[in-house]
Length: 211
Image (tube, rainbow, N blue to C red; front, top):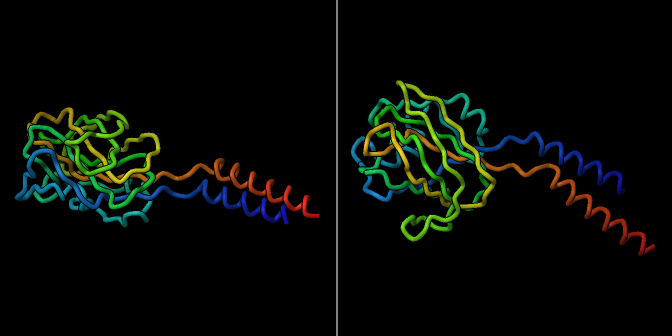
């Protein structure tokens, strides 16, 4: 019985080791300054507009989407901007998720964000505190009609909210992003095996005592 349990545990660990990390789309976005609106509303940076192919949030493989999906930042309806100058963008993931990275698609505009600090927070309001700093990230401005995702990573964090504090753009004072999404964190198989091994050992000890 113990042998069967160990086999099942190792099989689960192997399956977990090859599990793909899903991509997650924010459900809402706001900015510390006004939404530019018109053809450049903030929602364009999270609604998959301008992407060469759509994806299913929480299901599609992050690596596949990031590597194979381009963004057209030339069209006025494909990117989101605030009126600036600079400030921050805040993202609501819709639920607390374990996340450890992002995919960032630039926009073909001088306001394309090229450097930012990313924070995880317990609420959607940047004005009352930014939360935990996850890192500073630099991105390249879009050089044409189609740009590939730029991927950044950070330590796994369970959060519902992110604040992206803009440090630099490609030169413009009205900051914008083509598209942004986040990567789900996949638990390490070793952690599962250690936990499961301990539980099996405990069960075996109790079984021997009962005999």
